Length: 283
Image (cartoon, rainbow, N blue to C red):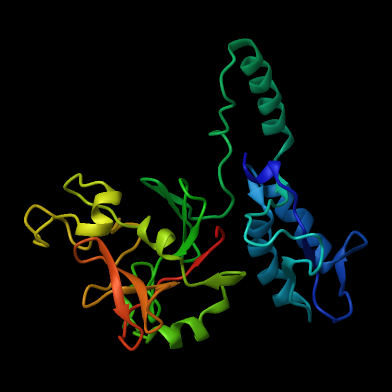
């Protein structure tokens, strides 16, 4: 609902500078054929990013082209405001939606769009999160998309590799506009964004946990550790903290971080080696 109310300034193209590859059949290019087949098979909600994920690999396999999807430069983009996206919905669901709108007018309630399923095979709802089959997780409360694994880890349960640690300056320099899972705008989260991942199994609110941790005495009594949704974000790093991209205003040698061993946030020296989890959207 939020996405459809905002304008989109994005483009999906069959490639970069490569000639368009014919031979897709029925007078279509390979790109056009794949594009139409994806739309025909779509049974739910499909946004531009998800459409791109479904198109890029088949086209790249059968043509000397790699489809591209991203922001159009200097096209009235509003910086730091979440933009809309193209949304493809089958006709039968559009009819259902119109029917629901009529019902809403009668009842004065809000439109229920729960019948629209986010595009992408392998999507799984985990509490407030939707885990996609491409190593990403969307927070339905904030609209932010996160990488499931800490940097350095991979696999369905982040079981491969070792969590990498970086100084603050190295992390800021390295993690700008990172490409992953078809997106090229991954970045370090702000401290407020990183704090939204804190989950206290003992019922302590996020706000209280930010300053004092899930337990005021920093003990693990009656507390599931790490203090994060472990199904959505498996194998979360516990040895130390996670960097945010937020420096400390009054100390040039410090920056904000979150400790998921007990759920509190604090200030660390920029020379410390901390873990990193990337996010996209928001700000």
